[in-house]
Length: 306
Image 1 (cartoon, one colour):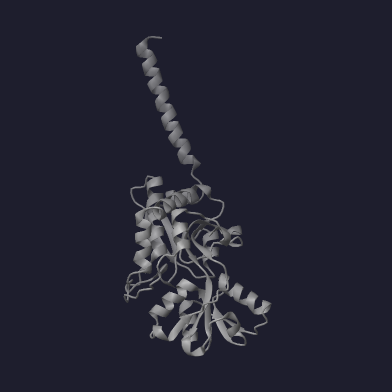
Image 2: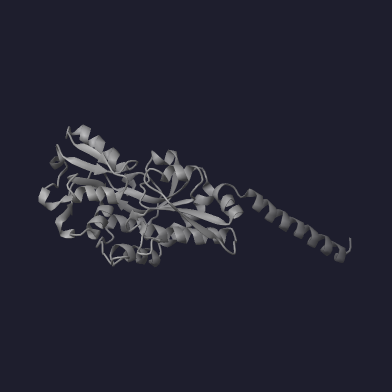
């Protein structure tokens, strides 16, 4: 074979191999990435009152710390799939609907204040932890309730489908507290029960309680308990189970964000500065455990890891 013929054959073979590889790569898309590629759309589940993670601003637009993280993941998915445009469909979710809507394919990312634990990992997966919280309770200062034992015989409220209500029921039985445990549909309804006296305390993640107090009519009238009903609990952006390709993109994106200066700036934006729509400030600076988590991203559900 002449050099010219050999070169021509090599170019043809290279072209076949190149396009064959690209076709194979396209065919290899599965799960969420394939769903997004085929539809040209990513579905983001948001909460309407999980300040400052995911909530509605003055224009009824979902905003928050977790929403910003989800938009970063969305940009990464768009780049991964080499899409010129990627539509974002925003889907409201609640504590009760978020896991079913993820499992049935309605949403691709759940952007809120969802605890990553071993039980939930049987149904869904999570990307790297973006916050650490603990279960405490908020009450009126006038009620003089601060320790767990102070709740004996009291009526408390929490949210169905949350880890908080499970912990409340467990500690009620373990300590024979005789509490009446009410269930509210969302944070707004639960907080109203405390304001109007239907419940003595609201059991929830401490940072969410801080946001509710900061947003209340009289922030100085409430306090968060010094006692915690749980060990530190990691929040994560929820993704579909058994979808390693999509999780890889989410993990790489969040790890890069959290370990960069932008990660600290994003935290400060939502936790130590005035936030929309009313300009409240949670005054919730990053503690040592959270700093460590941001510096060494992990998707572990084990509280002992933090």
